[in-house]
Image (cartoon, rainbow, N blue to C red; front, side):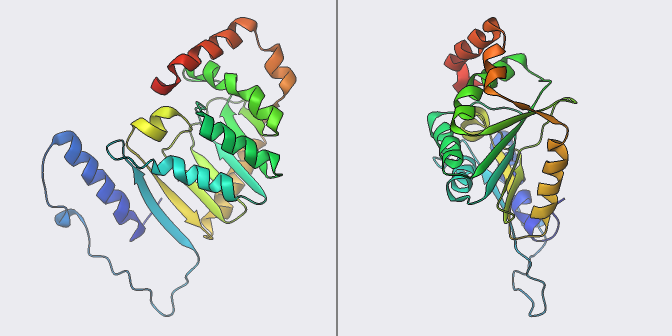
Length: 227
């Protein structure tokens, strides 16, 4: 849970989205507590919590740029959890390049999907990612709905932003970016505990996946921007 002054950003995002959907103009001050952004001298300045939002109404794909920045600057590892994996060429290249330059790049996906079409489409990307060195795991007990990036014991992102076209380009989304904050270790610990309940997917698994399902996954790429 995000508390304190960092939560003000999320409150503002909600009010702005409410204003768009309801088409009403309203002053936000009555919903916000005055924040004092001065840092006390004796404060424990243990890192940063940065709330941010992404809107389809502007031309800034903030969610995508944050993910690309993490992938591009990672030195040791990038650990990703996402319920959906529907990628454009730019994100595919970023994931592949991360793995090819020696960064441990791991993706956790659900083993039991909520939407079979989205799952088959996600599977269509597996082999090209695995070939580049990306490791993919599926959570066998069921469905994972977390949207998580952790990187190098320094950075973590937790929010609503999936690795798919809708989240990255079409939806109102939000997340919290943690930098050198104690919560980064907690997010990574949760990731590792989830990883223990996953099975790793291999290239052989991809090639042994039923032909009809592989065909459907490739065909669904035609509709990827809508999914």
